[in-house]
Image (cartoon, rainbow, N blue to C red; front, side, top):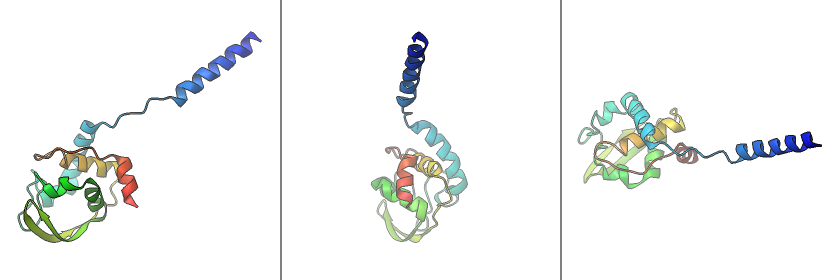
Length: 136
């Protein structure tokens, strides 16, 4: 009987430990570091090394009112692209940005965290869960 009580107690303790596993906090700093790599491969050609873009052709990400104005819109545009006129920092751009739906949710999160927290920008984190929800 004593063995049965000890075994039952161990099961309760193990179940409690597994059930109440601490939730890992999103690591924005690590996401930004990974995002720099994604930016270098996918974005730097158009938006340039310091996010300055090319006036009249590719909009800047540096101190960008458009980028920082709507986090969900930014996720959608990285995933699905953009066609048509937009106004960035008071200047009009009318071009095409291809979507990057082949990027993983984490890669989209990372690259947006990089650009939203570089080039003079400071923004709230974009999580992979937010990207996943908007991917549909």
